Image (tube, rainbow, N blue to C red; front, side, top):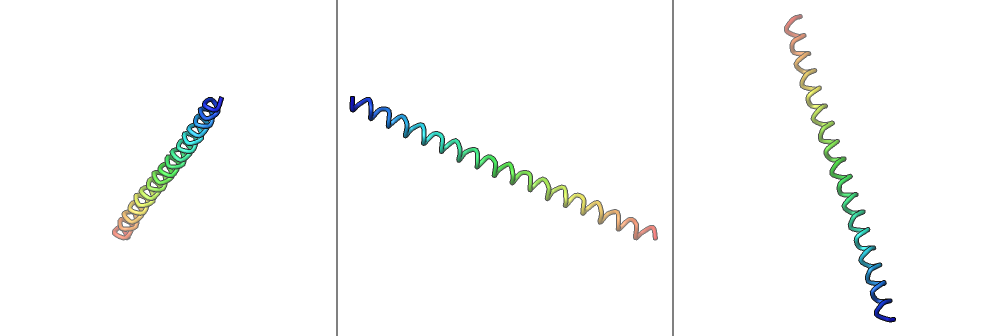
Length: 63
């Protein structure tokens, strides 16, 4: 009977460890996704700034 009880406790501990590992992995994936989103927004902002600089430079040449 004691062996069965120990086995159940062991299974519960394993299950809990797996759940914690999965939660940690999900959190890491969310952080990575957020970093990718931020990097994309920075890239788009830099492209927009470069386009605006070009536009201003071209406007200056015309005037």
